[in-house]
Structures are given as C-alpha cells and as structure tokens.
Length: 217
Image (cartoon, rainbow, N blue to C red):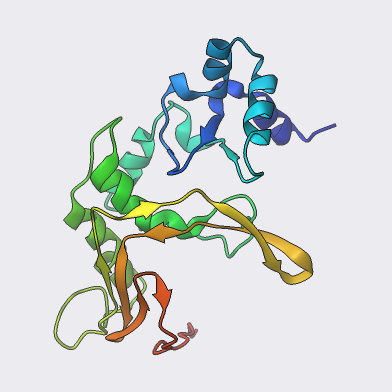
C-alpha cells in the first residue's frame, strides 16, 4: 500500500500537470491532467500513461503542493514581496531526485519579471536586489552583492531576451548510481567570480578564483 502522501499525489489528477519544455510552473486549471483527459475522452490514468510513454522517457509531471493551494502562485508572490523574506532554496540535496533547487534564481527573472501572465509581475531591480545585496547582507557578506568599486566583483551578465529554463533532466552520477535532477539554462553571457570569467556563453572556462567560506562560532 502506498504511503498517504504518495497515494494523495498519485490520485489528485486535478492538481497534477504536464511539465513541458520550457516548463510552466503556474498552469491554469484547464491544463490539469483531469481537465485534459476529459477533453480527450480518456481516464486520467490513460491520458497520463500515453503522455509519459509517448516521448523518449524524459517526460515529467508537475505536482505543486502547499504553495499552489489556490491554483496559482499568488501566495508565493506575497512571500516574495514580504520584507521579512530572504530569497533562497536548498535542503542540502536531501530531495535532489524530486526537486531542482538550482533553477530558482533564473526562474525569479524569467517568470516573475518577464513572463508571468496569471498575475502581477515584479520589477527587475526588485528581484535582482532581493537575490544579491539583500541576501549578502543577511548572511554578513558585506564585500559583495553590489556593483561598487572595491567589492568582490561576482557578476552575471544576462541576455534578458534569451534567458530560458529547459525541462529538468534526471541524471545518475551520484555514488552508487544515485539520481539527481539538473536543469539547463540559456541566456547567461558570462559569469564572473572576483572579476574572473568562470563561464562564458554557458561554457566552463576552467578558472577557479573562488574559495571556500566557513562559518565560525
């Protein structure tokens, strides 16, 4: 017998969606598997089976949980704009085969600034500030997070029009063949650390100017 949470996820067809490429993380109710199956004259199980077996094995389903209780991301917007919120997401890799945290920073720009159609968009300067100076200040890294003389010069050069998240991919490169989700992105012209390019047009330059920072008691 499936655990209660797994059983709920596996049967809530009205809360489950197809994850396309590029992925849509704020789909409307008409795009749920329940609604699409009804239009196709199939049961949700049949519709889902046909979809997952119709590609090359890489297709995925999207099941948003508590943040999607009203069928949109309005509650997430409320959190993002709350001054007590610090943007960031990581559980140390504990669920790396279920979620992909790495796409957060790019998604903040593509969805919330440029592409959102089911609610208010947010100003670019607000989102950048949230992800740079505010986060750096919160953790006590006062030498970074701003484009100022004497700061650390960690910089992303972004082509806003070309910025795009791809469909997540499952790879098996952890010890003992463990799985993890990765998500490719386009639109970063250059990434610099301490003023040194470490990525150019998505390609690793081989430079390693960064260093490990440890917390002290």
